[in-house]
Image (cartoon, rainbow, N blue to C red; front, side, top):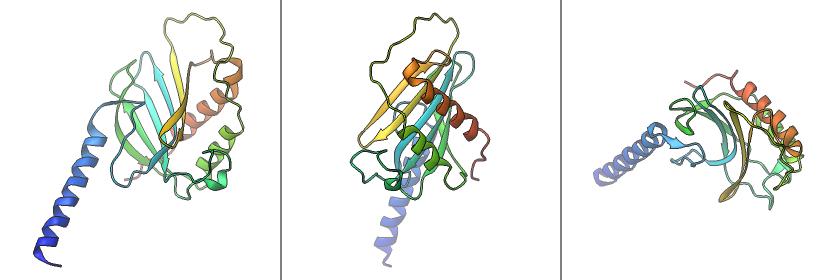
Length: 183
């Protein structure tokens, strides 16, 4: 390899490392997507945002789905899905930082995708009346190409149509919190 090519490759690698450093160390709203070379596309996100402790956010990432509907058939999902975690910067805030990758048992992420795919999502559900002074917000988002299908509710107060989604989201959070980060 020529010296000129080697220098160019070195500069590109340095730029990629800086892109990765900025993406993983800069606080961002949990709804903002993260991008750096090799991270893949956000396919699924689940977050818990309590009032009194920092938020926790997990994202499942992979390559673009080929099916017309992103969850129409789990067979259309990429083979290599990866799980990442970000944590809140302070209690009650939607700002998160970090992007730790986690080891995930085979089939776990596809299983959650399959369960979510079977839940009908009503865009305008009947919302119960409630009043809370101190709450835990849950969010679940499914990546749909250039956008997300995102639902958010107060834990324990989900619209009846979203009860199953709340159960899956809570199970995902509990399961993911037991996993170990890579490295």
